[in-house]
Image (cartoon, rainbow, N blue to C red; front, side, top):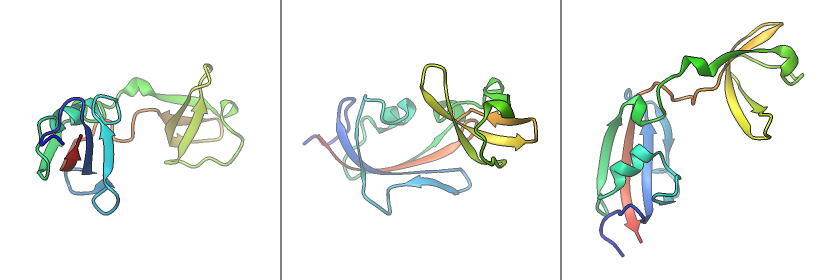
Length: 142
C-alpha cells in the first residue's frame, strides 16, 4: 500500500465541498468514504491535481477559483426555450428540467424564469462562477 496518492492511485477519502461562507454542498464525512480511481475522470481535474502527492491520514483544505472548480458562468449557456418545445407538465421557476438532445444524450438546465410562452433555461453547472472550498481527508491508496 502506497503512503501517498499517485496519479494512477485508487484512493479512499472523505471530502467536503462548501461555498466560502461555509454553506455545505456535498460531504462524505458523515457517511461512507468515497473510493475514486485517479485519472479516470471521476473527479474534477483540478481537484485530482490537488490530491496527488498527499499522504495517507492527512487532512487538507483548498480554496478553488471558479475556473478551477466548476468553470466560469457562460452567458451563452442561458437560453430562452419556447413552451411548445418543453414537456406538457407544470414547470416552476428555479426547478431543474431534463432535456434530450437530437443525438439522444440527456442534459439538465435550471429554469430561471417562466411565462406562458417560454422559459429562460440556464444550462451552466449550478456551481459555475462560484468559488468553492474543498476539504479532503486521505484514508488510503492502492
